[in-house]
Image (tube, rainbow, N blue to C red; front, side):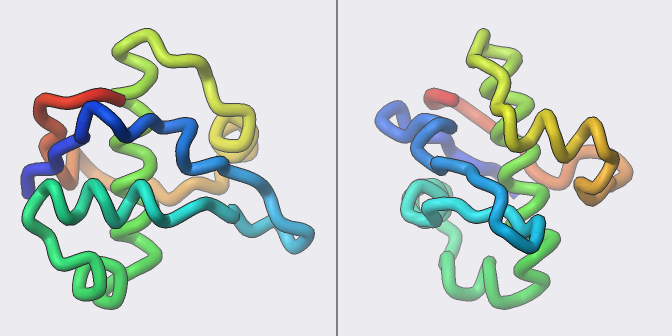
Length: 100
């Protein structure tokens, strides 16, 4: 699946935060924009396997963001340090032209 990262959408637009129960909270608007730019129905994408789809998309976007010189995100870095982010074998998505 190819994911398009529009130039006007930035990783920081997610406004990642940890909730009181340790859950990750974010603004899903940028993810919907990415889905629409990628020709993906956001409702179907997030309803079918929603948690893993969301984790794969955010983690893949974050890797592109860092590779392009973006600042580390304290929320994701903290989750990675505690090894609580889902893992997968190989890339689930191919990220193409756009801004991270």
